[in-house]
Image 1 (tube, rainbow over the protein chains, first blue to last red):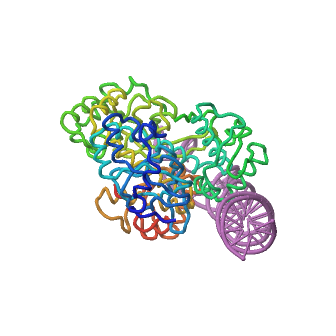
Image 2 (image 1 turned 45 degrees about the vertical axis):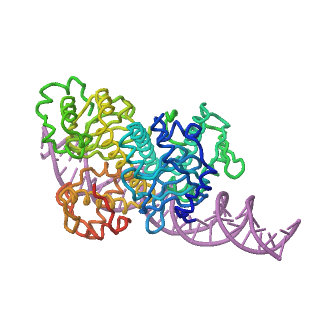
Image 3 (image 1 turned 90 degrees about the vertical axis):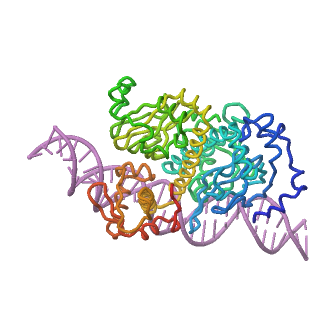
Length: 257
Length: 257
DNA sequence: CGAGTAATTGACCCACGTCAACTAGAGTGG
DNA sequence: CCACTCTAGTTGACGTGGGTCAATTACTCG
């Protein structure tokens, strides 16, 4: 459950097995490096190193220093905040191509935890910051990504502050479906399948609910025929229009991204 | 209550009366122009124009196009989201030096409303975007500011998702006090006075509560001697330590900014 | 002084949290 | 292959924080 030491992870062996050439990288055109080419891409390629995390493993603790920044290559990680009495709120989901860490500040404002098996493409902080100064493509791409995240965070504030438990669950499923559909370059429709990337508890932390309420609402949707289960984490959306209705959003939440 | 037409506002007269030279501007070193000097500042000075809004006036509607971006020079504006049935959630407060509008996207994701008398320093979208391309100081400053806002939005998610009504009110007052103290370059302490920049209803929209609950909790804090009122909008924090306790945060929420 | 808006206060109730028991799988090891 | 444990999820019973509706009060501005 603890972060392995640097030496442990920086071993050549650990590297080689996950190494990917940038031009074959699955997140090549969505990550912070998206606009880089030629020399600037080569420079990043030289700097980068990979790290992997097991499900449940802590990537960084809120308040600790993080001596690198990087992109999620595969897997899902959570950004969370915790109060002294243990209440926790997830404040972001890091999906492949999302950026972890804040240039210009080495103390992490939030904890990051691997939700499944996670691989990061990392850059040591100092060289990366230096590179941001000399390569405007990187800073510009990061600005774009940060603006997107800010918009998403603000959307989420509406959900947390104003939506009912039922609406929260429906919104979450709708967003999963829209993202899944976008990846496959088609529209979200009936009988589409999605994988829940989170446990009930993690969903509760994300949605500002308790895990019992999540369980009840999910099963209520099942009972009412809006969704079906397929195995442990699979969900079939049997009635997408109904799901959108239940989410409280207007019909075409224009999420493309 | 409606946004005045462009011509109405762009009249030379309306301009002149609020015009400020950049080197005398109160937000000179905190706004998006903070890192600009010499030529780049001159360029901005040439491009800029001012607009004013009355209390309650809508600056832009969610979904409308906004053909300019700009900085709040004075006053407070809110960024809000509204559901079809009227539920609204404030997703940000724009204070002096804060930036309004998103470069690269002319459709506003959120409504902006003036909470008091507001003055904006505006730039037409296209020239500003062009200038961002040629002047890295601007893009860099905007990145810094956006990262700060993202952190603040995520802090707010914890409040919205997990805090009780009492904790929300206490947190809000604490934040006001910390900002006030920072402006005066001292520590927040007992018997410090703050001005509520928001009505009960606006506070409710900000905190994800109803205005009745806001009223009850504020008055409960008064009854218990944690705060006192001074006139309509003035509040004296008679017991700051207690207020921080009630907020649920650990003692020194390191908010400087 | 009267009208209009903002704020307070009370009575009621329900959505969701809490606490606790129970079930279903997924390993693990004899 | 079956007990044995461990974790994740479900379900029920119950209490309450905060929402809703409505009446009242306090300010402000003609």
